[in-house]
Length: 310
Image 1: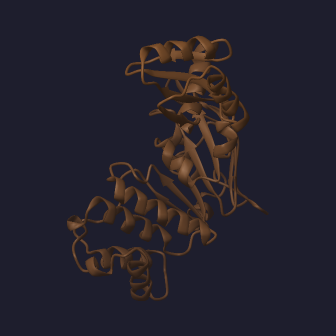
Image 2: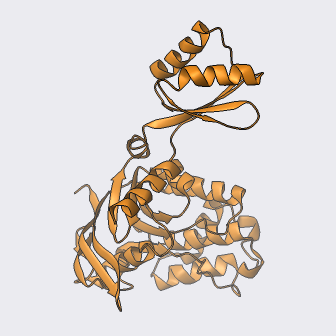
Image 3: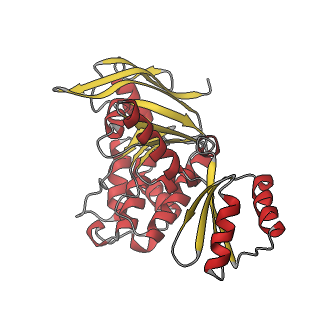
């Protein structure tokens, strides 16, 4: 079986608030699956259901073929969860944190397991220091190292880089990629669209209680066909002459500092045609830059479309 997680028509209501209104998603074994959504969209609720921390009102959720509602103990034995805040014991050292979890999971040699993970996550030098002295990135690495004890085939990471500095975030990305390369299935929630773009094999957007869209990063970006080209000119005369020519075929916006913005497809043929038109008019831009669609553009497009439908 190639499917690690299957969610079908999952619903959850808190008092009068319908958090999940029928969520459907599939995660393949060994992939990094990123679930995007605004604050309060229900990302953590889905993780809590999949990890047996709460129950759904209706619908089904399977992890490695096991129903999370019917066999929660079996689920907990085969997964690991790293929440939004590092679950390390500040009083214990890094080594002691790892050995404690290894003992709780009945690992044969907890000391050897701890040593291997300390080395793998570049924590050997800090192994015998209390965890309260660790930086945010070090605590996060220790937290994930603890979650790997027992070799769970599926790991849930709920906003794992929240609060980390840019370098610590990049280090964490490398850690997550290495886990997936080793065959571990990663279910990741994040508010950082660049993080999903960098890491995920499959991305799903959770909005207003349902999955609005899912696919690879490139597939999602195709939902926003137009990029943006910005041209800079040496004079007001050239700027307005170029605007008069290009506005016949493109959406053109005059900006400050002798700049012209044009909404245009990202294909080379359309871009080349734009410059042909300028060359034929003997107009040569002084500067050129291009912005291609990003996941941010996709995300805002989905949200705006939903607002228009309401």
